Image 1 (cartoon, one colour):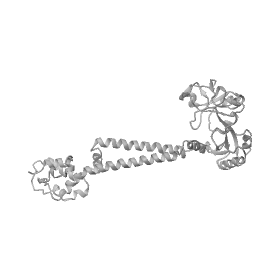
Image 2: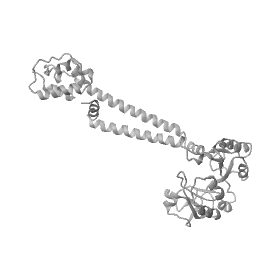
Image 3: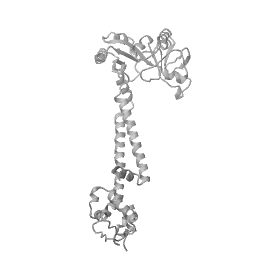
Image 4: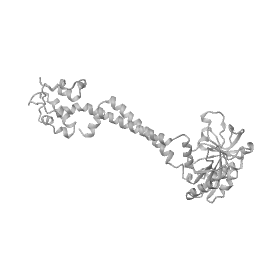
Length: 367
């Protein structure tokens, strides 16, 4: 018997215990993998290669609550290193009803600047031009269009909740983003004409290179630091982290779950090892007891079973047991066992459990 075979047989020796142990450890590892994947997606992975040069300028107080002054857009665009700037506004309307399958982000922007900022969005040139020429036009993400069966030329109605206006939009194009982002974009001028107090909530900036991102961030915020409406400029990844931070201390939540899972794995493994060692203690005792007397020829009438017992004892345990006095007697063929080494000699707390080896030894007890 090889060491690997012995380990495999010992692991499945008690199937009622082995199966729950395997399932519990497997589920714990699965949960740990999910938590670490969330950690990586939240705090390590970048959204896309183009997101490193995109910046968002907003109010430092609350998302999409404090509108930006209208003259900020031109002042920001004049900063060196800014290639394009587009407004970002959420409409939050209702499509058909309030069911979950009909809920999706609805953003208002400037069609002439939006596709310059999001250069990684793939859309046919004729569809982009048609959207820019139609004040009531809109473009839809490809997965969202496939879900609802939309195609260019279809008309949809968005009922306003925060703004007292219903938007009758015509789909002019379908775009494919580099990172999946369900949503629909339309011309914000449509809302501004119907609602006089509607203003831009946020601005999306495109930097000329990643090296100028930090310079543009500080330049925009310093420009409006002492104004009645200060700003906060940050990268797209930092904006995502700010949204996550609104949910609470997500980092501590994920780390606490991971630590609990690791502790559970160690506890289950230690408990399984302890039970296995406790069950094997009696078997080791049988080979280490120096008080046994093996008279020559006693009990050797069943040579097949004696040989099986000897092979089990010598091959099923480590070298430290093969060198014991009992093992030495077994190798010489003296398999007899005196009457005082029967099952009755075991301690009372082990009398209810009969390990396989002692069951065989009991069969060869000399009267």
